[in-house]
Length: 396
Ligand code: C5P
Image (cartoon, rainbow, N blue to C red):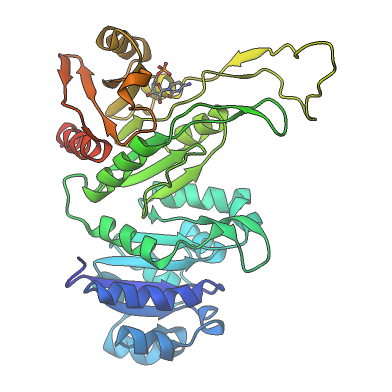
């Protein structure tokens, strides 16, 4: 799958560097040629010798800098690869990249390159969430850098949360998608997916039955056609697609902020089942049974993400919404298209008898300015593939 592709793997100095060794193996298993480049700090975690032995190629470090200029200079090193992968991308490396620093071999190569770059961030939760890192991330995304992860979980520093480097296999998928010569190569696509949870108090929330299956299938299908996918997901049952940038949110307000932060994109596909309402004022403590009847629940309306994207000054070329209806599907969906200002509505009948909500199949009708096109019932994966191909056609 990666046969003949040359990857320059910049290994940053973090505990996740040990996973970069496994990544070298996985990339080689798939036919890629891997040139490792270790930062000085990476050398504190793994040795150039182990990276070189696994890659079957010389590993570059600052130490060899002077002699290497005679063999392959930093410019050539940066240009000879089909893709530069930075894994782990530490907070420091991301800061250097976004600031355009060139004070060691890794940062110099990254500044001198005109090759596509994919980073797999890895750092402590607080470092990842720090506004400085998030600013740097936004700058890098704006510069066209692709991002995979970070994942969420227990971290070597003993904390829990986002900051964990994606698993090597996930990075391999992202590498394959970055190198895919599909029709969506070079296109950045936002997908919203899953339900949202709207807290009533610290333990209760309003939610819906969306599993995230259709959104995940679509994210995967778009990525397989070469798109760079930003996947903004609520707490879904189905895990997000591998190898794409995943932004996890809880509430509609958070999804709204994350979706708008992802702009500009070439297309936005809103598959999320966003809760229409939230508690106006979620209780800070658990709401107690008082014996004097149920509490009054004041609701406030959530922002409409699809409508906001459709009306945004950075409106993507293509905006697609989904409409889950239980009756008069086409008429309601066509009205929704007008109201929200999107280009297409993918409408489906979710009345309980269809078994579509939470099921493996879907029967959709695509509504655009020209009318309605009813597709036969098929698996959600097939709907996703067909829709991804249609999106590729519209963005061509
Ligand atoms: O109005 P309704 O919820 O039926 O519209 C469904 C479409 O609008 C879906 O594409 C959904 O993702 C999007 N939506 C949204 N933000 C909301 C409500 C719906 O993006 N607050």
